[in-house]
Image 1 (cartoon, rainbow, N blue to C red):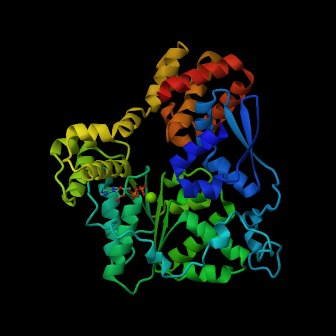
Image 2: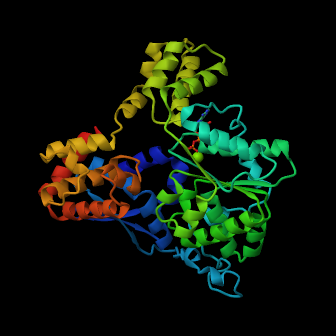
Image 3: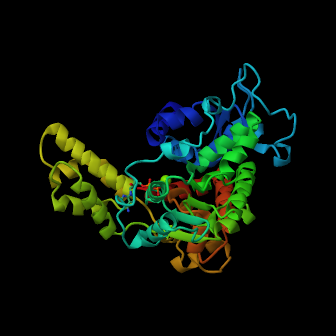
Length: 465
Ligand code: ADP
Ligand code: MG
């Protein structure tokens, strides 16, 4: 089973990411619906638990309905060493003369291969990673992204810093990274003398860990505090990573104090970033917070037309309209779809038609039809338990309504991309801790009550399609 699950994982997240994080996973046993998986270090344990456990569980339950949970445990595996300690070093010790987590010990591999192969960050790197296609010229503006776009232009084109930081947020594939690169390109072109550093929060964290490990925190600080513009993409990545957050907090303050521009992106608003320290959350919201909304049909069509114009072959307008209508998840998928039909047409040497489009995209179109919303979940669950949908939002606490409500919250967490606070809001403005509690409760019950577990599983399957 694990072989099948891991194959699907590989195809979902890609070989590289799989090799980096999930290759060391070793299944141990299945007990009471929980599969336990061993990893060699605590760091990997936390990592896998927070980033991949849900996905693994979903795939595994698909293979084997008996599997309701995944437990990640640390088990020493011959020849490796628990090397998560760098992450938990209190910052006060950073520059201390000798702490045991300093330089790598001989013959010992640090966390996977990742750290070992990580090169020191050069100032130039900040611009090397920029995608030449991600410019303002190539960005199509529509209602859902007009605020974010205007704010990005403003920081890129102002002589002074108009607001600090600029915080861009929105769902996957809606253009956050594109806008950030566009800002960097534009500043670079207008004022080549300014030092712009763009990197993902993930990279920031590795540079930081690396600095700790090689006792090189001075140059780390110097580098980050000497830039004119610092851009950190996907800041949600450092949620729950306390030392990295602390270091980022100091970097942030140092730069703001010197009136240097900071641009941040995330998948949620500052206040919704769970696992982010309060003081950092509040500071991230100090400047301008601009969200990118899910795309509308008009914007999707606009983006497709812009892309189609750059292609060497004709795409019938009907096909573009069809794609804009059918693929509503995000721009990345939309582009992927267009690329596929174009590649297909070129390969077989026939023009793009509606028929060929439907044929080539069959699986993609099905996946886009299958997304569930919280509203659907609430409706289905209410129906199943014979209660009023209104009680999904009501204050009533009677078991007969509270339990199904918890089930609906649990399924919302499992089947949608919504965050805990977002889910809470959909359930009559409940707090995210209530949602968290609901998820835990349902998991506990599923582990002990067979018929309850079957109920929930049945609902999950119906909803997931
Ligand atoms: P995010 O960082 O929000 O996940 P990206 O910036 O990586 O999303 O965007 C995903 C893809 O969609 C990129 O190829 C990007 O160029 C494209 N894209 C997103 N929004 C737009 C837009 N408004 N105009 C043109 N291309 C866009
Ligand atoms: Mg991005």
